[in-house]
Length: 241
Image (cartoon, rainbow, N blue to C red; front, side):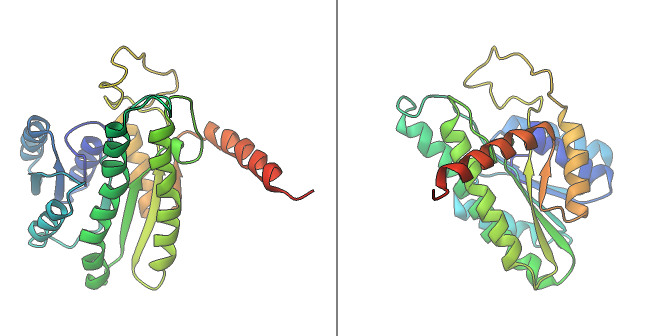
């Protein structure tokens, strides 16, 4: 699991531990990793937690080598992500680059480091990539974030097809509002949305979807109507008259 020190990643790690699974994970937040390590120790869960940057392919290769001494990877959660707010013309280039490095290349690095071994061990396994409802809809001020999350949709769809002759499946997890600190750096006074769910509830949905090999795990069904309206509008825009 990537991005395990807080929020969704931490909830996924604790869910896995409660199910008796060994937990391997990484994050850039040393204090958060220490807190998770202590919690996993209190549960008696086997674990391998490391400071790592998903945007650095060498970090992910090193983590994969360390995990090689553990049981075969059954669930791979490419979860690490960050969010920056700003209009297309105003968001600094460094923020665009940070979003792409973590939200897009971080997933690529995670997949390339871990999935070949998952295929090779020949046991049923699942890849779960954390996208967002922003993988299918857009919002003013979130164009850069949504662009990176949109990119995960075709990536996971293609990966799912590429893995058809293996024992490994692939799912795109698309959370709506979740009670995490992802907005903390850009909108610290943001009120919790009325439809926000706790990370633990999301973790339950993610595991259920992963075990069922669900192609797209949408946590907030109301977004389906927004996506349908958007897709219908796009089809109208591109239709020949």
